[in-house]
Image 1 (cartoon, rainbow, N blue to C red):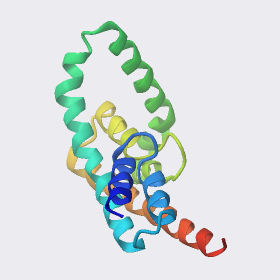
Image 2 (cartoon, rainbow, N blue to C red):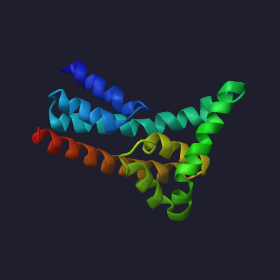
Image 3 (cartoon, helix red, strand yellow):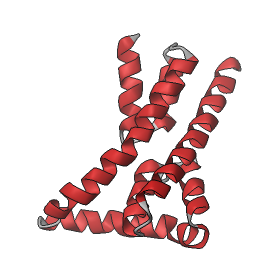
Length: 151
């Protein structure tokens, strides 16, 4: 049980699915639905400060490495293209909407990168990302529970 909870947490903090993967994993493995939601939500919210620290402190040093810089520019262009119009047009609400969409390519990682690239106030961006994460997690949590009842 504790192993599945740890895996759910790690999936929720990873860029390869976030809580969109962690919540279903925990529920499918029979963990308490409320514990899974809280643990995965907390892990996903934790991404913003960790990712922002990386972007502000570590990223600047790694940009000196050619292959890293090339990959970082690719990710930055994708993030600007995917979220740019929405965030520029709707600001705070656009960031919430972008983060809350439970589809690949959106979420707190992309939202944090967009925050960094568009130089959005960190406190407002954290609130927008958190609201988006909560909504996305509720959608995934509810959908998974309903789907599992139909099995």
